[in-house]
Image (cartoon, rainbow, N blue to C red; front, side, top):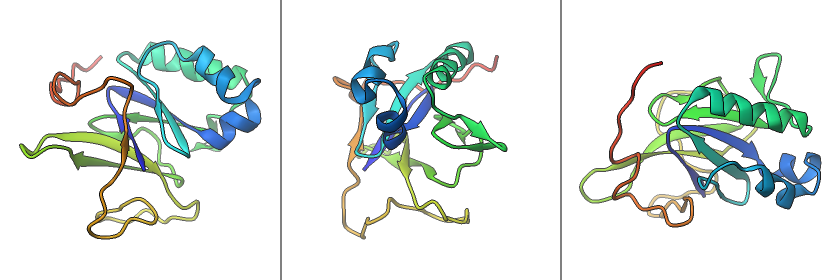
Length: 158
């Protein structure tokens, strides 16, 4: 399973949410500031359009007990950009672009991977994926590719 990455996405390990945030998942849901939340069994994703909003949300997660970076490495939280991928190298998270429709439309996606993964070039698929398998993609409720940020991609540098 993978989670959608659109705009600038904050990716949080669900195990960390459950063990560190007061009231666990329900506590996390209460602080999500918009309707972009999507999740699989291992990751939660919240999307933003502006870096200051990302920073504010990450700082809130830190105040609640999560760790963003330790020695420059993501621990409980990672940040991804829909075009560029991971903002900081991360050994527990993979990013790729996935073709989502017959016209060749693509979306950014992330999934949890092995902790001891050594980054190498090539195509990487979710653990347990086999040729011929579909990749299940978690998206926000009501999301569709038509009209999405992924389809109407545009980037304005700050």
